[in-house]
Length: 205
Image (cartoon, rainbow, N blue to C red):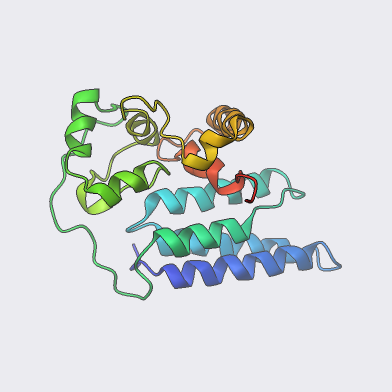
């Protein structure tokens, strides 16, 4: 697996955006380049930011299923730029051994709470958006596990942001999107909340 390079991932997504537009303006074969650049972006993120890599992959698969689909590349690039810290080649992989579960088994609430208890305040804030500190998190944590961790904060069952709490219509859109993604995407490590929040934004102001 290649070293993590977030700047490289953003570069590939920008190129994917351009080549996808070209494919719709006289160069239809350029859609293959767009898909290829998205796959390269996934690979650049997979080692240290698998949730972000899966987010890009989900968008790529949606484009493969429907050539008229338009990924929100700007939202993806902003999300990676703001939430991923490794901006050059040579990012360090996790430095501690992790417990691996048998394939197909998710963790109990007690096991997930034990993981959460190691997070600091900023990491807990990131968890609201489905982002987890991978140096403190087992590699085989599933998307279902992450979604459950996001619901474990007392009094705020889905860890809505302040903006989302202000707009119930946005909450409904996110929940509807989560249901749709869950029905279409079978990979366990895809975090539906992260995918939906990348494309559903609160109104400005």
